[in-house]
Length: 293
Image: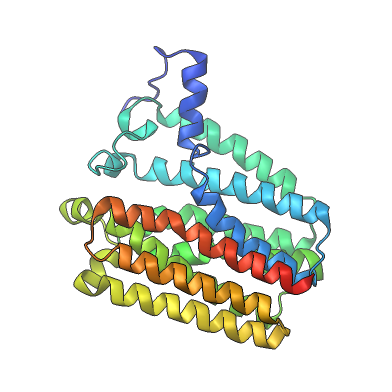
């Protein structure tokens, strides 16, 4: 692939392709990352986290998700060309080159550093672990069928960081919340992987969708169940009342519908089910928010 393929496009087109590279035109990624971070901020802040910290974390979620997309597309640029859903991505299609990805990565990295330097030392140390997790994730699909587990850790790492930022410690409840969110991530990212499974089988890319095979929906349901059971237990420990439980019930109903939506393993249906998981995260957050009001 050429070092850069941007010489024949206008500045406006170039900026749009950079936005696409960072997936800023598709908010589902940062929404799925934001919801558990907000859960953690409200729990750690006892229902009233400082607005300044909330702003830092929301901005951090958007920036780190964008950086993760750049890293992922850089690592997968040769694979993406052979996958129906990803072959028109800027790097895979050649609209942007590797130099453009490096420029975007550096800019996003500097922005992330500026944000995390506003927080305490423990949160800064946790952010270093987050960098390692984000950089290593794209390469796991070459060696293991469980990259979704690593993604679950990546998408849950805002939880201990939120607790450390507000309390300067990471209590056991934060790690239990991380485990719950990891289970949710494996469930929805398996749906995502199901939409790519025919192509992944051809090119040798590994995923839980490939590993689970015809038992994929059963495993998705199992991970959803673990997610909801842990959240229900945490709600009891935290003394949440009816609003939180109502949120869980609605979220369970949504999850059940999404599993049903994937029953035919249709690519489009599986991808739409993945996207709809944001409703689960939002419903749980608003149930939690109402519990504190």
